[in-house]
Image 1 (spheres, rainbow, N blue to C red):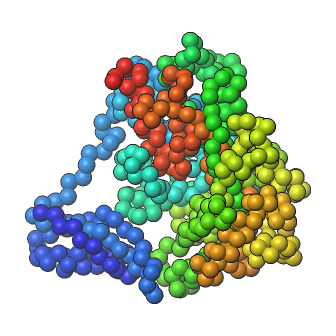
Image 2: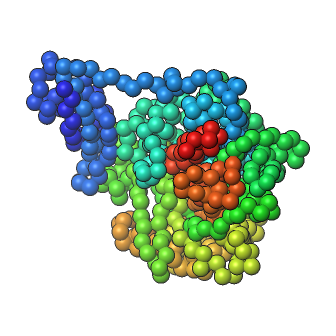
Image 3: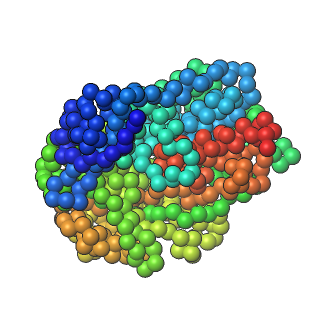
Length: 521
């Protein structure tokens, strides 16, 4: 017999397995001797009251023991001799597509312009310490994609898009903590993700797949209007009946290559703004009514949204106890992003705060046609870079000065390693973006008392929230609407937004590829 019930416990109680077991047995009204096991299957924080508490969903097993499901990897078999499927990109969409292909009996062959996750660290250090941007290896490009060094948040609202539990279990089987299976807002951390990503590569290679780094796709091979392969680094041809395109939201050269080859792409709405950094102690005080927070509470977070002049203004990729990092993918740009380590123990909290940009907002860029949104995005990044000294120092203002439209005399401390300097963001950002951000921040201050403070820093620019291009595909076949054999996937194709949604999209695409290659209906 299995009884499901809910418990509400103080943080210290929820952290004690004996107390959880005792309370669960009490609430189940079973005798202690009858209970074989108590399992927590869901955990979330309820901070609505004066003192935060944990809400736990538990299963109490009486007369029978919990039987775990077999490991997914136990069902894998070698695919060395199977049909090959090319995957471009080793981010979550690419890697999870590869795992799914192996499970389905197909051989994935992956190419990534960047480096393996360990070698990639040297290029991240170069951009942090010296302002040197490697256009092929940075916070966006390389093994694991942007998610590897962007916090590792696993929360998604895309429950109808695929098998979330399967994606989570695969992460656990490759080294993630099993706690991600029960947390309402699971998180791994940028210090632990690299090892997990490397383990996924080892699995792919162990079962016969191939993973190639420093391998930029420079051309697509088309025969009779069908995708037949790719050219790597301008010289090596690799052919396959199916190509999964999973290059992430910042691979601008791929979009231009598709356009040159006559492969249809579309401009799509995205969002652009700034990253706002607060002291974590301040956010804890606002959200938990305590500062410092008690031992068993994680760094607190927030989510804010409103409408200003018909456009959404919202927080995005909130990183409690996190760091602001330089995320440019080419010299001459200022792009920032956020990340957290697994302990989320930085003294700062940061969040992207962005404005929705619709296609009708891009009138000055219409001459760029399908690239209007992309060129608007690029122009803002380059404008903010040009305002500085040629390094990756980012323009910033105190939050109060940003709203009032005045230059800050000094800036608070920050986690951003390249450094900040006071700059007139109210002039550097496009006027409609600044206006909506200003009014949005004012509204956020009314919704979250204490948010609007001169202790907070506005840092420009947060511009890579999603791809400004969509690669159209069929809802039924996941294949490009015009090019048989081309399967767009993940964030770069415009069909995902985060690690788990991209992973699930990769899995869905892999299943569609199997149907295509094996001629299944």
